[in-house]
Image 1 (cartoon, rainbow, N blue to C red):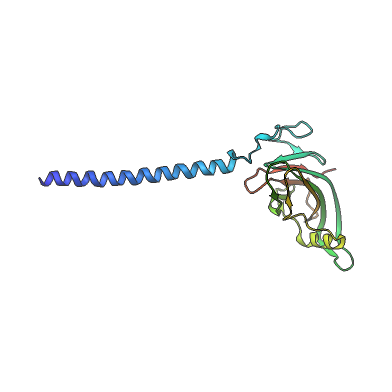
Image 2: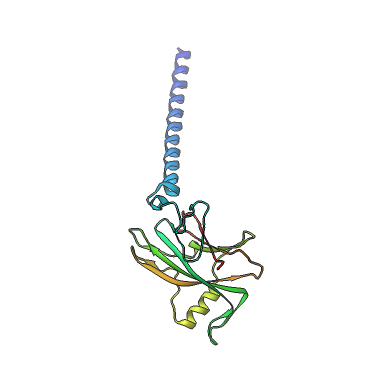
Length: 197
């Protein structure tokens, strides 16, 4: 009798433990599927791209050039020019660069079906040493105030429309082989645009 009760208790404990294991296994599987959908398989993936840049190079290893268009998620990026300066702004807003200001003119078009807000994490510059640079808020502000222009960051872009603006970077003088890095959102894939004319 005692042996029979002990066997029932063991089976009951085993059954409860198996239910817990199955429950947590299902939860883990669902989480993995959600992460997979967000990072690659969602509606914002690059499946709508032709797989090439305008100049015909494959997008996986392509480095686009000025005036080429690259697309990630719902945004198409075209860098149309780059200039340099040691200072920006007017006499009241003048700001000297720590290194050299690089002013990149960029067009961003919304090719998706929903409104997209541009933020500064979408656009950076990298150099031959693998360093990554964010935009210069001081340089951007000095330039914008002197020209009466609104910063393109945090602007909403409606489907089918585009916005063009200048993005200012303050780069060290030893920075070479500069490439603009752009992506269509937090989970986007960085595309490269060479800033060499």
